[in-house]
Length: 288
Image (cartoon, rainbow, N blue to C red; front, top):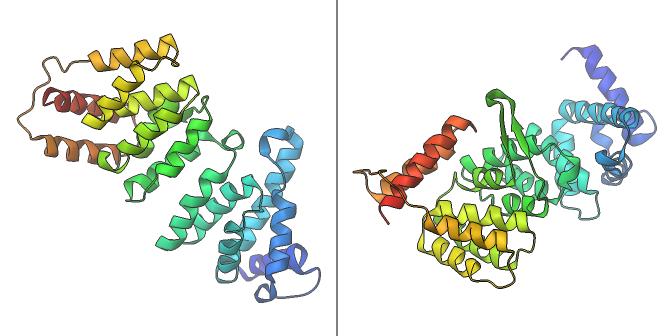
């Protein structure tokens, strides 16, 4: 970064935080909080094109300043992400900023806790999916972030590299299945018991079926006998229970197949990976 650019960013600090000639080191927590409030007190989905572009330009400046003053900004940003009074969009964009600034595991864990606090109607679903998938394949517990999409039945992510569109169901699977089934199968069953949205119920049913576990089968069976469930979803649950492996046979052990499937879901998202995922699932099903 040239000295001219650095000087420009210091000027941004002047305007953003202090109201007068001051170095980045002098940014107070109160001034930083005030700027976060003024910058992020909006939801992108409520703005028109011109207003959204103007806000985007402001946020670009904020990010540029943060990247030029990482050590000064990091503690302030961490504090703001821990402040529940901030806007929901800040918890997304601010978390992505922290993700860009720090590779520290504790910071990454804070990012993962913050992202699901956003209103997902105001963020790109594809970005949310790929970000949570990154955390899942790097060993983080993504249950809270994954289950967040159940509040948004229309959740849909597009993966341009493979011209692949994933609905809520397979997005949920990609956010969970890079981890072992034992990590989340009980949570899936519990969420299904309390879920009222029909589409989210179907997403949970499919995820439970893919676990190929007694817990998953029991949860689907219980749902299929639930008198309050819609006829369509009861039939869907019964269809899942009736699925058979056919000629899908493997000499590998159950544990080996599960490990192979987990590693497969840690690969980049693709339609090819999903086809292999189905093949391994059928081989697991044949062993039950």
